[in-house]
Amino acid sequence: MKRLPFILLLLAFLCSNLCVKAQDTTLLRLRKMTDDTIKVNNFLAYGKSYQRTEPEKAIVIYNESLEIAKKIKDENSIARAMLGLGFVNLSTGKYQAAIQQYQSAAHIFQKLGNT
Image 1 (cartoon, rainbow, N blue to C red):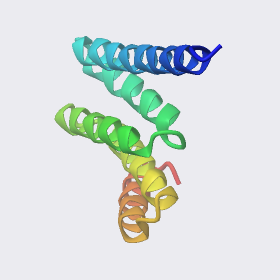
Image 2: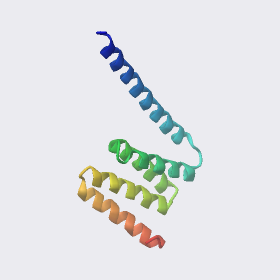
Image 3: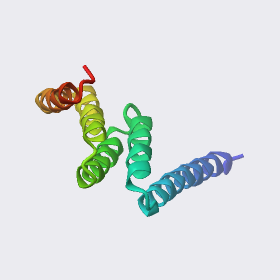
Image 4: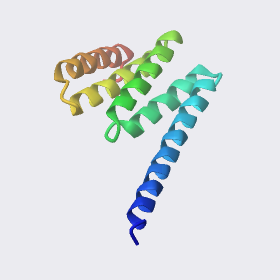
C-alpha cells in the first residue's frame, strides 16, 4: 500500500512525458512539410491550440509561422500570426506588446481589405 503513491506519481510522470513527446513530434512533422503555404496555416492552427494552455509554446509557434509567412510574402498569414501573438501577450499581461501586434495585424488587414 505504501508503494501506491509512488506508482501513481511514476505513471503521471510517464504520461506527461509521452504528451510532451507527442507535441514535439507534431512540431517536427510541421517543420518537415515542404509546401510553405500549407505549413504556415498548420503552424497557425497549432499555435492557436496552445494560446491558453501553454502561452510560451504558442509564442514560439506563432513566431515560427510569422517567419514562414514573411518568407513567402503571405500578408494574410503575417497578420494572423501577429493577431495570435497579440492574443498571447494580452493574456499574459504584456499589454504594450499586444497593442503593437494588434495594430500591425489591423494595418495589414485594412490594406488587404479584410476590415
